[in-house]
Amino acid sequence: MAAGQTVTVYGAYGHTGRFVVAHLRERGFVPVLSGRDAHKLKELADEYPGVEVRPASVDDPASLDRALAGAAAVINCAGPFATTAAPAIEAALRAGIPYVDVAAEIEANADTFAQFADRARDAGTAIVPAMAFYGGLGDLLATAAMGDWTEADEAHIAYGLNGWAPTDGTRAAGKVSVERRNGRRVRFTKGRLEYHNDDLPTLQWPFPDPLGPRDVVGEFTMADVVTVPSHLPIPEVRTYMTTEAARGVSAPDTPTPTAVDEHGRSAQTFLVDVVVRLGGTERRAVAVGQDIYAVTAPLAVEAVDRVLTGRTRTVGVASAGEMFDAADFLRSLSPHIALELRS
Image 1: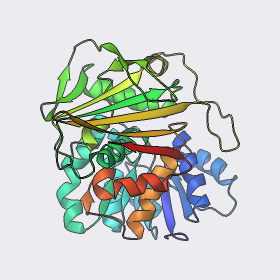
Image 2: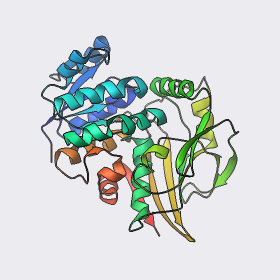
Image 3: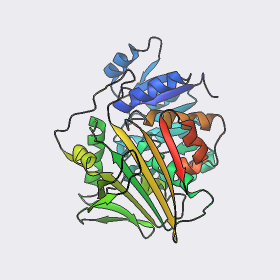
């Protein structure tokens, strides 16, 4: 166990960052609170007496260096990641420590692989982007479902959310992504990202119990189209979103998440159904849990713990499924996620 080590959380006062800070403490780590807003950092620190605060800005490399000084790792929770990821990774490389982020932005994750793969590998440093509900969990499930397969024809990742109340950070990140695409949509087909203006289809996905068949928006593309094909030879990666969740995140007046329990989780539930197909055979992995933002914390913290204790399969920039033993990682997330693998 890596408990007792210091981990800097950049964007600590954000919605997801707060979950990450709390989970680090539950796991025995010592979080350092960092981010752009010194006032919000101090307010958060009042909830955790004795926790160190180190304000930093992505346009001030020296402040980032101070924020990471002496830390064993850094978790970046501050979006939009199109703005924060590269400066935070540069700081992690200067400090010689592993970097994990919770980016759901497709282009930001693609940039991380393209810009830092060689440098991180040469430095022997682990950089794990999209270590979150979107990008990380789907990649772990797809990798676990593959089992002993070395390739597949298709991967389908269906998100069965009973609703989606987006955070301010989600809205800001989405706005940046839309601007970067000039309003176009994106999908992964024929082994590459393809930008298009096609209307998204509505179809029915056969979710297993307890959800059952639901209407979904097809090609509601998430970060899995970067993480999964980064290491698995699958030419078609498609993602789907239940229609009620798609409406919630798209509507401008949907409220932000409301806590319903002592852990700060919302009432949102999810069932992620992943199907990989090869020829006429398919394999399936299913994950069930509560609150997509809250469950990101155990994903990111478990990743840090495994990197710091040497339970990794590679170095450099790698998605969750490539960096870790996917099935073992998923089993370690109990009780946060209930897992089922089906052949």
